[in-house]
Structures are given as structure tokens and as C-alpha cells.
Image (cartoon, rainbow, N blue to C red; front, side, top):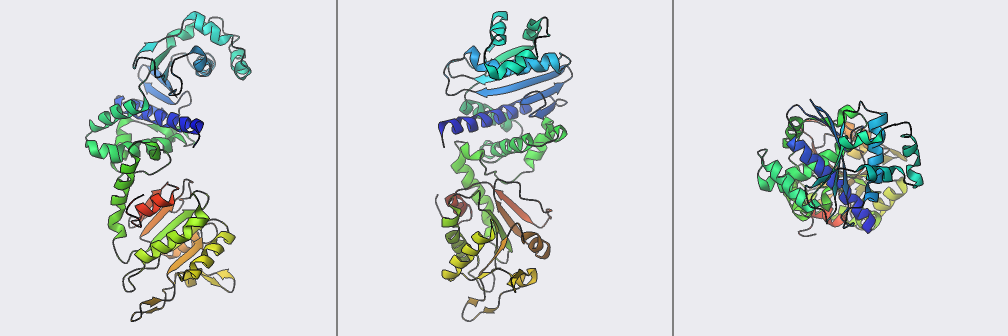
Length: 400
């Protein structure tokens, strides 16, 4: 990953953690909009709206005025052109050399310098403020607060979560990563009403989540190896049970080195979870990919003597043929086929309607989970694209 990409992801994690921090400190009647119409975090209180934008500048040692031109101009545009002028604006920014929790405002001279910027990318915003006679009135509605480093912010946020009745260990390995993931999920909702929460509603939803989130966001945490181990332990019980009908939905565009590694993964899975001829059920692998890729996987598995059922009859997919029980020779320990493989795009909907699955594991970062949940259906959403980590979670490897 490039340094630029790394800083971008850190910036998002910082924003999500600040959002969580604000949520945990909110009053019972405060309404918090994540990715609000104004800024990253909009808090509606009886006194008005407090809007906060987060900036993480780990790579910049010192604060410079030019580094905040854009957020200040955008806030001014909202204040003068789109609000009732009762909103308070905060820029919550981390610069390594600035004292943590210190605050400052802007001077009239600094504001004039921002408004006289010749950067063409700011031209439209500056022109939208030309009609304002006294731009300095914005200054009493704006402040900068210098925040801690990401690591220190995470520690203080974990302390706040612990005060909500969670054990420290559960906070670090379960509730903090799940809270970040929940905020990330809320931030991409289209409707503002869907992104609006209160402290109590957020905490209640968090308490209901018992599976550690494994995603592009949580993998950036320093505790990620512990999170993987925690999620592995959570998955162990159901994986150890016999006679479970399991389905794995694998996104070929998401998993790294999919073509070169997926066949060995399926082979290892079958050897572990379909080796007891009397007790094990034949697993289903649903591939998000084109037919050429699926056919290649089919052929390579058959070459390894892992016999595949594709459900094709006279060139067409037949769901009843696909889901039929394999013929078995108990004495010799042989089965007609060891694994079922289907296409997510063309065949999975038919399969899902006909088969009463016990466990569905979705390995993708895309929102491809569209079927209705059932009380008796265990659904695992796993957002890691490393085969080594996937094998570790499924007990197919003891280390990563």
C-alpha cells in the first residue's frame, strides 16, 4: 500500500473514532448525524447544531494556515449561504507538534488571507461569499481543536466504551472494532434519517453484535491479529459441528490471487469439513465471477480428484440436480461428489430458495448480501481478501 493510501485510510479511521468519541460523550437527547449534511459529524442539541470536521495530518509536523483553507471556506459557505447562522463549526485536527486538546480561533487577518487565496480550486466558493458584507461574523462560530494521535485517541475511546458496561478485553477485541465498522456502514447510507443515531440507540445496537468485524477498516488497527484470533474462536463452535449445510460466497474480484489460490482453499475445506461420509454434508461454494472462471475451478478440482457437482443437465442449470444428495458407498468411504459449485449471478438465488442452509459465509467487500435472514440461519460477513487469513479463520491453518 502506498503512503498516500495509508494516510487516507488512517484519516477515515481517525474520523470514525472521533465520531465514536463524540457519540459516547453525547447527552441522552442529542441527535447525531454521521456524515451529516454539514460536516463529518453534526450534533443537534437544544442549543443548536454543532458541526465537526476531522483532519488527520500525521505526515505534517506543524500546523499551517494553508492546510485548512478548504474546510474553512466550505464551513463559511454553509454558514452564510445555507444555514440559519446558529451553527457552531469545529475543525478537529491532529498535527504532531500541536498541544493536544488546545484550541484556537482565526484572526481577521488569517480569514482575509484565506479569502484572498489564488488557488483556482477555491474560486467558486470564494465567489459565493462576495455578497457577504461582514465575513468576520463567522469567526465567533468557528474554532480549531487539536486532537491526539490516532493511537492515543483509540485508547481514550476504549476507556469511554468501558464505562458503558463493557469489559476492557471485550472492548478491545469486539466492541471497539464493531463500533468503527458500524459507523463506517452508517456513513454510506443514502438517507440522512438512516445516518442519524442517539447514544442509547447506538450502544444498544452495539451490544447486540457478538461477532468481531473483520474488514478493511479493522485490519488497520494495531490489534488486528487479536481480532482475527477472536473471530476465529467465535467461528470455531459451528465449524466443529457435523451435519451443517454450509455455503461460502466467494468474490473473485475481492480475494487476492483468487485464481491461483482458490482451488487449494476449496480442496483444504473439503478435506476438513466433508471427510466423514456418514455425518458431513456436501458444502456449496458460490463464486462471484464469470462462467469461464467457474469452469476453470471445476476442471482443476476434478484434476485433484475433488469431484464437483455443477448442477448442469443438458447444458442448463437444474437446481434439483444440483442439490440432490450424493450417492455414497459407506464401506469404501466414497461419495459421488464432494463439493457443489454454482454462480452467484445466475444460480445462487435458485439455490438459496430451495436449500435450507445452516451457515452462509460471505467473503466480499461488496454489498452482495441481499437474501432475507432467518432465525435458524447463521450468517458470517468476512471482509478480508487474504487467503491466509481466510484459511486461519476457517481452522484450515494454525497460523497466518
